[in-house]
Amino acid sequence: MINRIIATVAPKPREHLVEIGPGQGAITGGLLRAANRLDVVELDRDLIQPLRASLGGLGELRVHNHDALEFAFCRLVENSERLRIVGNLPYNISTPLLFHLLDQAGCIDDMHFMLQKEVVDRMTADPCCKAYGRLSVMVQSRCEALPLFDIPPSAFNPAPKVNSTFVRVTPFPEPRFVIDDPPFFSRLVAQSFNQRRKTLRNSLKELVTAEQMIRADVDPGLRAERLEVADFVRLANLACKPPELS
Image (cartoon, rainbow, N blue to C red; front, side):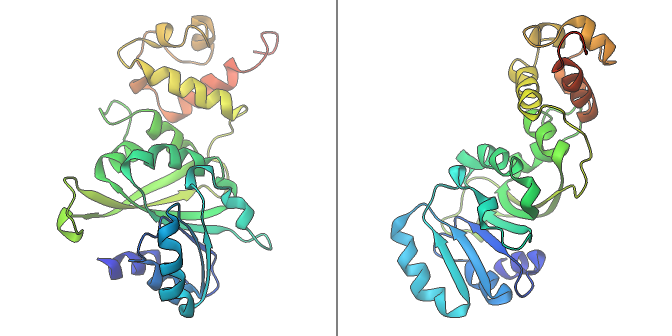
């Protein structure tokens, strides 16, 4: 499975790879050996010296003892290159970490993650599907997310109680959607799904009027799960403008 993951990422010499949470280095050595250089972001200080001791001879290994949720990945960029991110993301931080990386998508070429299958299902869900929600809209507004293969619990020691999926997330080289006010867009999407059973007229009443929804060609009587990503973008772009411009 480790070989399959590395073959799927297909690192090339001198590409700028960044691994999040290398742990004891299960895939770190293969990535470093193939690319000749690797940045790793690891929170656990006790793992840093063993990583350097066991893998430092394979290439240029730079270890950053930071919380990935607060790490400025784009500061690693040199000479206008783009980063390739790899990681086995813990379930409890996977969603906020994905949002953190989406905010830095401009310096990222692609991302390969091992995630709980449920999270990947949410990332790739279509409207009117139970899994469709805030994560679906935010990821799909900036990236293409492609599930690659599932990883059974038996591939881990100890075996978890959930299935995992290896997924490729590729930021669009040219924006698929023009979002005029990204923070407002994020707030609107979050508010839309906070109370999924409410209609947009009620869930968004603090942000958008029913009249604005109609002008954005969005039915105020719908629930958030019925809207396409483009509908959220259109609505946010209209609602974020001053009244005289919207």
